[in-house]
Image (tube, rainbow, N blue to C red; front, side, top):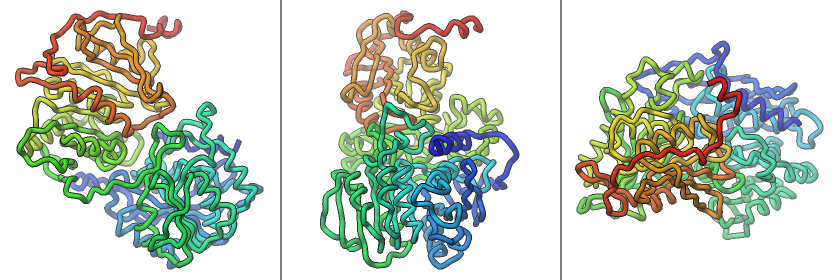
Length: 603
């Protein structure tokens, strides 16, 4: 019951956009990507039911959109404020400064960590802190743009045992766990927690979905034991990761490795500084939502290679950023395709690199990927501190003072500059995006359908007026439990309405629908074709997934969709080398359910 209450409270907080303002932030449009909150914030209350824990936030100047974070649990009888001011806390603050990450210290509710389940629900407080940190609401004391996939949990002394215990209880919150000088974790408590259900989708507000039945003890987690008791808990995490003993390394005398190399379990006898903990371990993992139950743990992507080209330039009077991924095979001798991949609201170009992994397919198939960064804007209507966003779809109405074409024009300029710098095959330019980036994909494509050969908006739909006539193949994808879009096919809802718009534009026959499955039936796809059988509009419902862009999507989109379409200089669309002619739209009703009677009467 306490876990359910904690979830409800965290979702309410994450969605809260009203009330008196608590945060005093400073937004500088000349430095739009620098965080608007910085400093030390003591005694931040984290409340679940009748329990309240106190946290200390440290946010260094210059935080960027979608910054990683570390939660540090203090030893017993040590406040967050005191630990942050002590030697180890100062070292963690130095790590934060050097790496531009957020560090948050948390003390137990009653002074000592409740490890036997008999007192305050400290685990629920840890979970609530995670959700509070990712909220961004201006009602908070210290909101910032946190990377929800890259939150490390570290504990010292009894806080180390708490990290091991509560990291298991809320396994999908954290990318990895480090326990320093931790005493033994109670066997009975750990066993009980291991049988509990956890959030099936990391960092998502969807509840403890029974049909998913993700059990805590089955969720793989990277763990580092530093001078800590390992009885009971080492076996727990080794079994969860299905890991086997491997060779020692320079940091750990005992090492266990899983089939997924990112799930590392280390045991060390020597002292490790916060700098070493961050550099060698805590910074190395992310936990994403995915097609696997409990999400997927992965190594962070190395973006320091010459393949990743970072841009920060003036674009139409605004400072804009984007990453261009150039495959190793590119030498300029042949024109190559381009895929533009657009992140969602509050996220970043780096997050889209990590989540989508378009660059992995680009490296194999020899095309360029552009990851544009949304401009950080002060948007009071969202109730959040300034975050990265795109003026597309519903966000256009939330920013009435902005030119509705500001981002359409920016993306066009970025494409123009890419074509000027590289040998680009203009007949094979594609666009995809997630959430607000999905809306931006639809907005940009609606403004100029002939610029792209195909598009793939995912997890965020917006019905926009299509302003140009060229046919444009469109594949829309949505998770079964998506929190920002719906896979439900019901007359009049946003998904059906948007599909009708693109079906009409592309001249398909809605009375003849081809259904198919991918990934052993997890993807349920319906395809709308024109009179010649060309698949011009597709929609996929991905079962057992939530609001996410994941590597399986680029994989499927490229090989089954994008790679089949090209655009001639005169705007003609080609499918597998053959010209596609405009057909006559034939509306059908069998592919969606009628609107509920009360809704139909209201309309």
